Length: 133
Picture 1: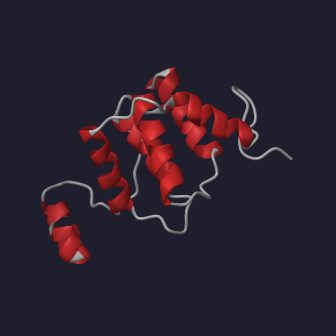
Picture 2: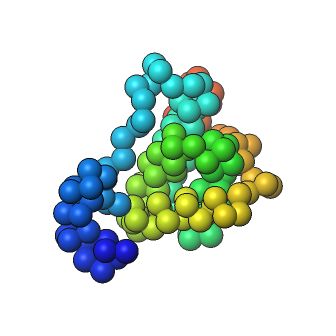
């Protein structure tokens, strides 16, 4: 709550508590070689899917990342990476949205949605990433 009132004071409190601030860059919890294939795939999907959605579309992508990762930290990192591609990116709002998914986990959206969106953008498993030329 301190962060919401005063970002600088909140950042100092987080440093004192040895916790990352809501606006601190996210880093992957483990090296790529130590991560599961699904975690690596989530990162690839986050890279491939363009973030040109309105709030509702962005939220749906977040729900899909949550379901595909079963709410894991690696899933959050992928969602955060995806979110950061928007000029409207707010790390705090991204974290709050992710935590909100825990209260009502998605059941009708998941990895299939992410695969569909990535393929629309030109992504192929084990191949190219991003938009097709």
